[in-house]
Image (cartoon, rainbow, N blue to C red; front, top):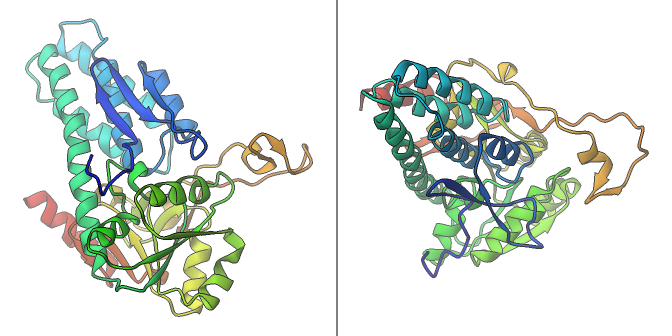
Amino acid sequence: MSKEFEVPRSVEWEEHRIKILNQQKLPAETVFEHLYTKEDVYDAIVTLKVRGAPAIGITAAFGLALSAQEIETEEIDVFTKEVARLKEYLNRARPTAVNLAWALDRLFQRIERAASVNAAKTDLVHEAIQIQIEDEETCRQIGQNALQLFKSGDRIMTICNAGSIATSRYGTALAPFYLAKKKNLDLHIYACETRPVLQGARLTTWELMQGGVDVTLITDNMAAHTMKEKQISAVIVGADRIARNGDSANKIGTLGLAILAKHFQIPFFVAAPLSTFDVSIDHGEDIPIEERDPQEVKELHGIPIAPPDVQVFNPAFDVTPHHLISGIITEKGIITSHYTEEIDALFTESTTL
């Protein structure tokens, strides 16, 4: 790892196992764990040891490749059916992040062309590793495209963690900040804490500080005041799924930031790879929204902060409509208007390359 980039990888392939950075332990401890089974992988994704749409996709791909090595058959048809079961199992881990299904589908399509079981097992590993390699370059390119939107001295707000540990490296929304650091551009980041799991406080501030990026932490309900008093230049967020019309699902609280940005006439950007787009969904109303354990809201680090029998509504994501989005930054460029037409054109181009 280069001197100027000190953030550890969130997930790595090792022989017969997967190495992950346990993000539940951050920032107090930097703990690496090993996953050996499909159950280990499923649990790591569900419990947020691994999180962030691209990192989830990479981990699931590694999990499918790893578990497939244990299938004992010489019949390619039998092997394919068993891999299909593994794919469906892992795909249930988190319903909103489309990268999960995208990565698993990509691996499955690879083995459909395999001539033998041994070849299929090898192909699965190679394809999973290739997904991670491509994601790093994709994130770097997203960062390059985003960087043109900012100038030295800008103050930029973000929510959740769309950074290096949510991807292979660099991140999506945070990628331009690392690249700006290399170019000696002075950007200051305001990170919303991101209740209830505190990804902004625990993860974004931690990794930006690891990378030497100037960052200030605020609570979620300070966003409006901060936009006004600190003269925020832009808001940039990641995404877990983007519909064909540009409606974008991201961590709960993102919609509120978009509405505030509109009020204060601040540009609001979404940064995501093409693998996060779901062109089978025409608009955001069709994006499934994961609801999580009420204890995440009723407790803070295991300490009760609400009556134990209070009712809780705990959606993990919300959907920002495209009309509140100033631009969607991808590895292929920035979409700024006519989202449906431009997204269709991007995917037409990508399928003809």
